[in-house]
Amino acid sequence: MIPRYSREKMASIWSPESKFRIWFEIEAHACDAQAELGVIPKEAAKAVWERGNFEVARIDAIEAEVKHDVIAFLTNLAEYVGPEARFVHQGMTSSDVLDTCLAVQLARAADLLIEDVDALLAALERRAFEHKNSLKVGRSHGIHAEPTTFGVTLASHHVEFQRCRERLVAARKEIATCAISGAVGTFANIDPFVEEHVAKALGLVAEPVSTQVIPRDRHAMFFAVLGVVASSVERLATEIRHLQRTEVREAEEFFSEKQKGSSAMPHKRNPVLTENLTGLARLVRMTVVPAMENVALWHERDISHSSVERMIGPDATVTLDFALARLTGVIDKLIIYPETMQANLDKLGGLIHSQRVMLALTQAGVSREDAYRLVQRNAMPVWLEGKDFRTLLGADKDVTDALSAEQLDGLFDLGYHTKHVDTIFRRGMTRGRA
Image 1: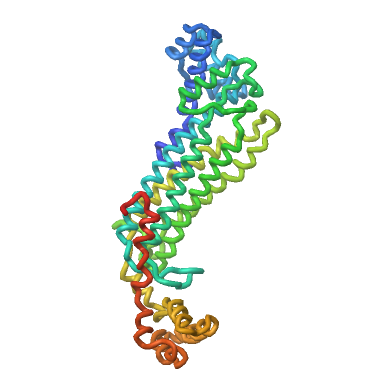
Image 2: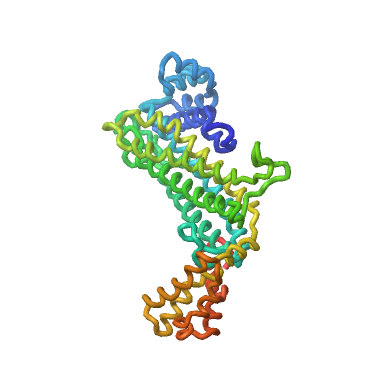
């Protein structure tokens, strides 16, 4: 991923130095296990830890000749270890190193993503409680529907990211598997104890059945979860983008003192961060289908998945890490305009109370079909001519025959729509206050 959308901690997981360091640890821990089994001398295992080292540039130079990255690494490692290096990689195959390393990298990436979601949840929780009772119009199909609060809107995203967190935890558990089973996964030339030892040392679990490679359904699930999290990022970003539209302007991204919105129009304050997040979400989701197509490898193994994973591993995790951090910043500094929310709520002359009026008519003995017709015929002039809904209802004899003026007035009480907000918060904001 390009530096513009990378954060150092996540990007470092995928650096050549980190990758080769994990490769070294896999080989060194395997030597410890082999020494414990008596397969290699204990002095050899000790020499690997004491003298073992590598140089990225040297590995690259060797690979340019041998056309095999693991062999290039082992050759460079041997240059540091000396004669004892002949005991390194005993009974192992390249996939044992590559797949186990990828598991470590993805598990570490998942840990950072979980931390990112925790930070986002904290920001959403704070802002949701801050605007728990800030009235706004709810919209369906982009059209004014009925009243809600901005706190409830944010609470819906909060509980969604709670689910995202749970999915990431499950995906991390599924991906954190180790395979040190040798050619075609039969352990013919290496004892299963080596795999168990390496797995424990690296914080992984042994893959129950590895056909020389770890089954790629695990990876497909991992990247699918990243895609879902990215979609949740986009949903919240899209909400903010709409709210920032000039015609709406109920909320907007923070705009710093020296920030510029347009090279041509000095007045512009654009939702650039949330638009950026929408694009980044597409990139993360782009990795899901290739990960799923990697599941169907030939027989015990092929390497059609390899080129894919070398790209989607860093790209998806680095991009999502950046996106989650950016979204947290957006929420943390989001500028919210409750007065505009109220003004928009009042814009349609009371139409937001149409369902209450219809239901009251049915309670008064009017059929649902007739109640709908009566309410709709008074609602349309409000849409088309800008008239007041309450006034029109009060002048409709069919309505006033069923409902008194006092009853009609009571149907326009905004508090009716917020009476269960506390219940919603108790049910949904499980990370927050009661």
